[in-house]
Amino acid sequence: MIVKGVVNMASINSIWGNTYTNNTSFLFNNTSSTSSTSSAGSNLLGIDLAEYSSITKGSYNKLIKAYYKKYGNDNKTASSSDETKDSTATKTTLKGESDSLYKAADALVTTGKNSLFNKVEQKDEESGTTRKDYDTDKIYKAVDSLVSSYNQLVKSSTKSTDNAVLRQTLGMIRSASSNGKLLNDIGIKINSDNTLSLDEETFKKADMSVVKSLFNGSGSFGDRIKTTASNINQNINNSLGNYNTYTAFGTSGQYSTGNLLDSIL
Image 1 (cartoon, rainbow, N blue to C red):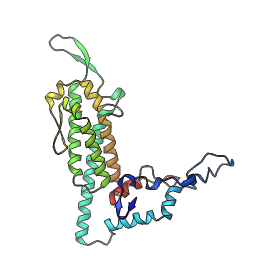
Image 2 (cartoon, helix red, strand yellow):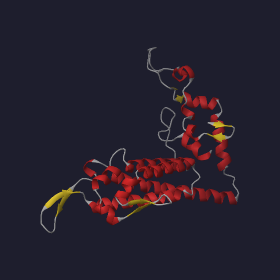
Image 3 (cartoon, rainbow, N blue to C red):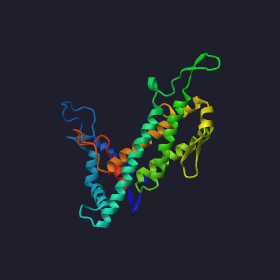
Image 4 (tube, one colour):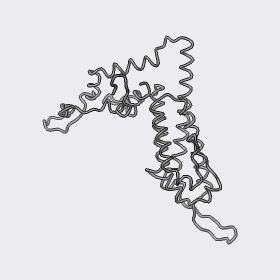
């Protein structure tokens, strides 16, 4: 919320979701039901009551004014038009890089039969015997791709003024820092500019079970990167106007008013 011109970033995403005193958001129960004891719902005829409340309190009006104050309208001067192009170029770059990072992380996070961490038959050239082990070369290439995409996104994010993008990137950097020791053990160093560097020799000699714990499966460091990339990509889509279509309930599947507020206030 905004108090005397100060934006409380921690509460922005909850502006639209505040509950009412005495649970008045549940005043209208499923109206299509003939039972007076039907389960509570939070919208009537497709109208979300929390968002309706924000309209009556003037929140939407403030949002619109803030939006046009920053982005103006179609009648721009040549100089302001150039600034818009630069802003769009930055967003387009971030969109592409977040997409690349998402794909690189997803390749490592994936479990099951398509997991890169499934052990494969390998033949010992000296003894001629075969054994199952991790495909270190394939895993290294995947991690190298992730590190490269990670670095590109971190660098490009420094050019962004979008609070949501900056916050997501910061969260990813902090996640890397909290896993710093394990990353260092497998040959990944965190540089002073928050980018990563990967040493091939150290990595290929590392315990691949440690690599797996870092990058594979839900809740892993790799999964955190994947989620961050997805969130940044969605935020950029929203800021470029690539919103999802509305549902039958008058809401949008992935569009977040909180993200829009974060980016313009």
